[in-house]
Length: 191
Image (tube, rainbow, N blue to C red; front, side, top):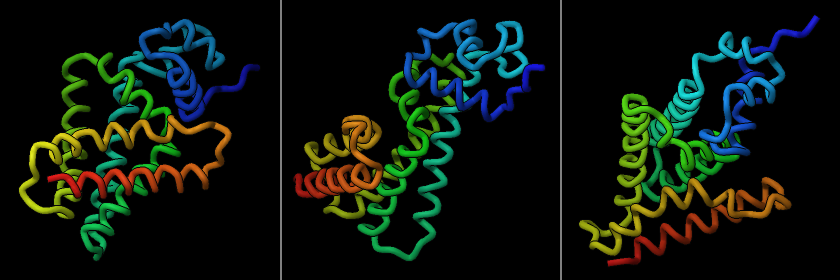
């Protein structure tokens, strides 16, 4: 008798495949083969590839927004809040690497209504992040500073992937945090 594949195991294996290969390059048949089920059984686990992608992206941005809420409830200075948010963002990246990869590379594969829902959450997170960064510097920021602020989140989303896989997680955290802190300081020094 073939063991029943749990939802969490199905999701883990599917995410692993989509992290390796672009969402649009994986067929449902390939997905079924990768997770170890028959092509006909795949629809017992998932409505569609798009529904899976949507679920993963919503999960990511909800986790990021929860992080913002947690940081906002703490009695910290704006600089400490931003530091905690960057640390939390990078820790989430460590635990949700596949989600971040899909968000950066494959979010455009969603249909318009799903894409709009994900976009609302992404923009809400970015607005909260920018608000924290803005509290550090002089107001209002000039065009250079505003332009640089727009670049920080894509950098944070990609930064961990730039590092060698040979570096252990503790070293990764130190390197990514140091770079992120330097970027924030540099942005705040802009007119």
